[in-house]
Image 1 (tube, rainbow, N blue to C red):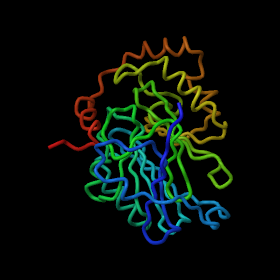
Image 2: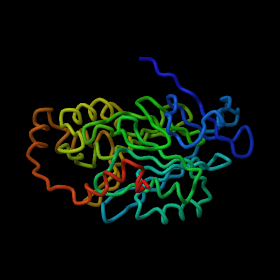
Image 3: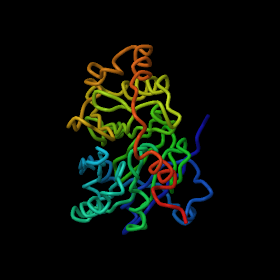
Length: 291
């Protein structure tokens, strides 16, 4: 099926300074009118001739062992930035860092509807109203913008490609830095809970499926270049980063054949997530209690 995309141009100072997102047509409940934001897509010669420089920070929330990632285009005049998987308890820390580094936060993004912590996207929006929240359409959660496989999220001249990686939940996606002459090398994959370092997310709730997870990781992540850096949503053993090549060789679950993997996942005997009954309902509404 062919998807129809629009380019939304968010201009702050001059026609050549922008950050944009390529998405399918917006949904009816979005809190602002997209027609007011439409602009023509232009690329300046300077943007084509000079590769973008990524400003990157990996942040940690210790109670849920969650990684939040801050990315920004440091060479763009506005230094547009985004946060991946922010946590409500560390929003003030994250926003203070954004301010300190002189960045303009434009997006707060989730890889999926989390069950072990409350997302910080809604709280961020109350403190920085221009920020737009993003989650996959398949998650059925609320957000300002929804992404589907193949969409590109631009911040300055850098973009993230959206890859569907269901299995931990129905709506899991992996965000991968773009492939191109002016994009980042090696590439980076923000895998959420689909692929962890030497592990993976559980598949026994929220529409999880070990069969789907195995296929997702092998088709959407393990097909990336082997030097692609893997940045998961969690780590419980002190690891910070891996590579696709490492996980293909050494992941004790996903390096196995599918039937062995499914047997491993069926026999984990994990306890019920202690935050699930609180976190999931809140995360379906961007982390804020509806009034």
